[in-house]
Image 1 (cartoon, rainbow, N blue to C red):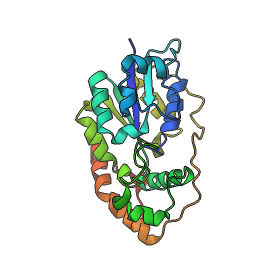
Image 2 (cartoon, rainbow, N blue to C red; image 1 turned 180 degrees about the vertical axis):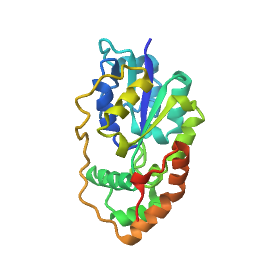
Image 3 (cartoon, rainbow, N blue to C red; image 1 turned 90 degrees about the horizontal axis):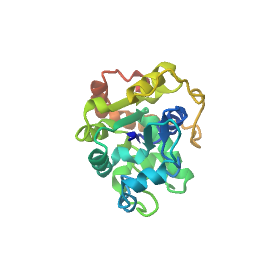
Image 4 (cartoon, rainbow, N blue to C red; image 1 turned 30 degrees about the horizontal axis):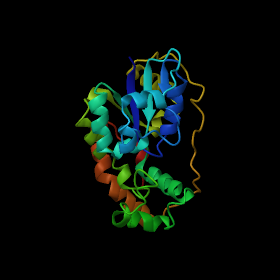
Length: 250
């Protein structure tokens, strides 16, 4: 029997980097392909095929691996996925890697642009998000390509997962602290129960760098974003027991 864990998000926050660190570990097998992500527990047609299909289709049977992991960053906002994972893998561990939500939103915007999903200027896209975030092609993409800001309200998604999983099964990492940190990578391996003395070769590599031009926000837009995230960041800081100093602006 395999033990399972899930990288549930957040999008544009280093989940591909995290995937690579985990895939290298000899005791861990990660679901393939990396792209498109499996999204098995979010996609009704796939989920209907059953868990045997999941195990056989997304995992090849890596020799020596007893831990199986999946990265589907859209899971962070899918209560349907949370319920299904909890029902079938109640002892699964969940990994969140979180990035400064303003930087994450900018990266998400350029990702949507580069994939032909966004034509609106950034400032308009951010300011009019609530009017349009549900207006997208549900057949083409699994979650909204326009949820730039609401996707950074991390505490709300973490709280949702805490309704289905105990706190000790959830690990939350900050992108700005985690990338390149041997100690934090070892801590992650230990959390999963894998040997913590393994050092991955991808530790200092840049993985899945977005096609993001240098972006300077206007003072008004930056103030709008700082105010938008202030309350949810404060709740997150209290939840994590951190000051989130890496995210502070102005």
